Amino acid sequence: MKETQFITTREREWTHWDAWLDRKRRATELPFAASEMAHRFRELCRDLSLARERNYSSPLVDRLQQRVLRVQQRIYGAQPRKRAAVLEFFLSGFPALVRREWRFVAAAAVMMLAPIGLYVWAAQLWPESVYLVLSPDSAARIEAMYGPDSIRPGRARDAGDDIVMMAYYIYNNVRIDFQCFAGGLLFGVGSIFFLVYNGLHIGAVAGHLTRVGYGEAFWGFVAGHSSFELLGAVLAGAAGLRIGYALVAPGARTRGDAMRAAARPAAYLLYGAAAMTGCAALVEAFWSPQRALPSALKYGVGIGLWVAWLLYFVLAGASARRGPEHDAG
Image (tube, rainbow, N blue to C red; front, side, top):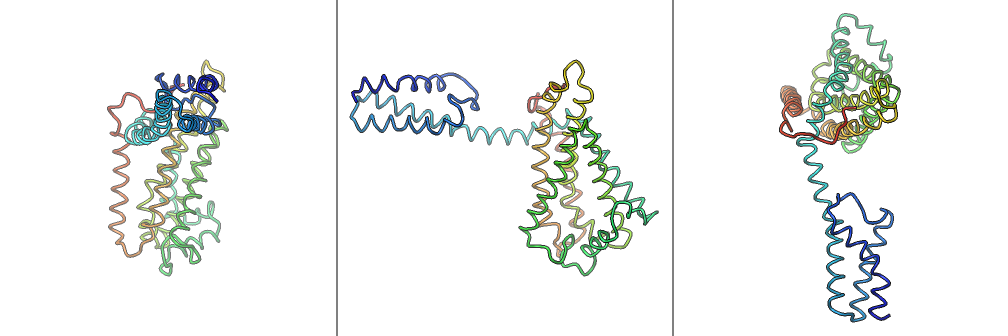
């Protein structure tokens, strides 16, 4: 094929690439459908290879080479920007978003954390009340996990190694967070139910173990990961309440429009909750069950983490004007 024919055949697609490269568009916008990008880029690389193989003019080869390099840089150069955006989100955007959504976060925190405290107190005065939440078999299994004969607190005798347990903790925590979030689709009622229920369940376990004398093993086990796990669940519940509120009180919008407007901040809350849940599983698998660590150290680390998280949500990103885009909807 002659050089002029080659240019005529391929020039339209090159022009399409150039228009994408020259305009200041967001890195997420693509010149072709996402499913075609790999194929189109391979064709562009093939054009350069053919031009070299057929000894086409140096200006054409140079232009093709520059085009390939620019496209590659544009596509793969977006990755560092994405990483920077993720880092910026967790350094400033996420805590700023939590502050903007403080009403839903505060409501979710009360719904989950208040039942824990109340049930721990109630279990000391009315021990039989724990069986309203726990079956006798469940209570016996929990006692065995934290009793003096347990090899590692918080685990059954037939539990797997640390990696297996981390996978289990991730599964369990994600399940709870998803329930608290997805329940928002039921006009928020589902989120309210799962927040309160999980608070009661945790409170019943904590109160029962404290009453029977296994409190040191239990509180030492949960101290390290409790801030990650509980706050993650609270934020997932807040995201669900955000969706539920949009459905209950859409204002001048249709419910569909209100829910779409609420979906963005809710999704970002859920992203943050997911990261905290992953951290909780890591700490719960490798730090929490260590019997060699003094209880005082575990308590100190746990308290320090709670304080650090609260300071993070109150102070981090305070200078940022906005975090992730958000509609007050």
